[in-house]
Length: 264
Image 1 (cartoon, rainbow, N blue to C red):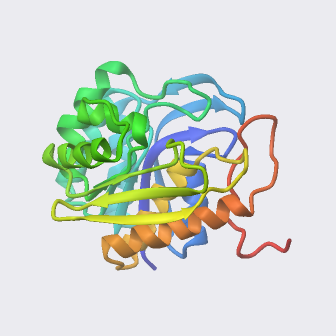
Image 2 (image 1 turned 135 degrees about the vertical axis):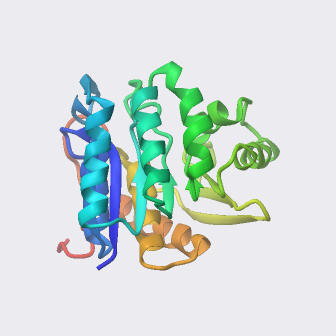
């Protein structure tokens, strides 16, 4: 059984964070483990409170998982602060962990901040060089690349700059673009670009889409898929999870991670 570890925050509403990650892992036939970085009081409407765990405790969780269960792939999400990022980066190197998918979580779907401003430099300097692939949305890509990202040329140049900062590859997610009918995600692996197009699903159940997408990529990497195939299959999974989502809560509800096994 392939194993995947998520290093991320807990979402009490279970639509994003480690809850979304573990659902994704289970749905895609890998065994999921979790190192929790922060606890949030969160629902579909917003983030109402955050308690960050001590960095040492985050490191202990990673040690315990790797030494007993192992990790064929790793997905990072909400890392909260520079101290946690430093520990995570050190542990990834210490244990020689591969297939590292970095979702540079900065802001929740509700607009609430999930990463301290002083942690962006640590994320860029310490974690990007360890990433097999990083999966920013366009606002996150602007922060990582240090430039505005608006046109197609901007997106491609920002992708080059993110890879130049150390990541092996980057997926520039297209969900924030204004394209009416399609969402186009762009993978750049340092050699060339790969486009992945899919329909834009008309739904308010979009909480945790970034977590789910990154976790799906990690799951497919753990199962041995090459990166382009892992991205393609992750996008297909997320598209169907959005298509089959049902209303939960009064804000942005979650996607339907287990649509394949539930009857209509």
